[in-house]
Image 1: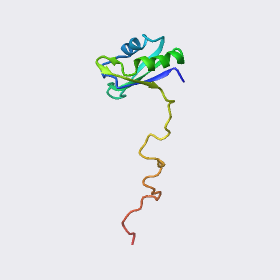
Image 2: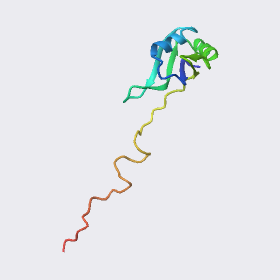
Image 3: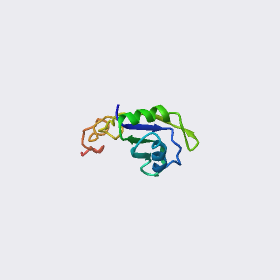
Length: 112
């Protein structure tokens, strides 16, 4: 087990400091981060907490999963390793080709 936790179903109004305070009741919190939308800055309703040891992380899961934070029941699970996605575009096709068409532009007019 790692010492990083996924926290889901967070109220949108909860701050990083409130999240850290909630988890400090079971051990030492190294970091607490609410994930926000990059454009609006609004919370996405989930975050991550890093505890100082895997044992404290397990205790946080045992004691704080389905606990209430700011009037909402939260979900606490072990965080899964981040999987980097290479392509952030549309689909998995090569960005250099458009619809599989590699032909140069050709005019519809005939040159006679």
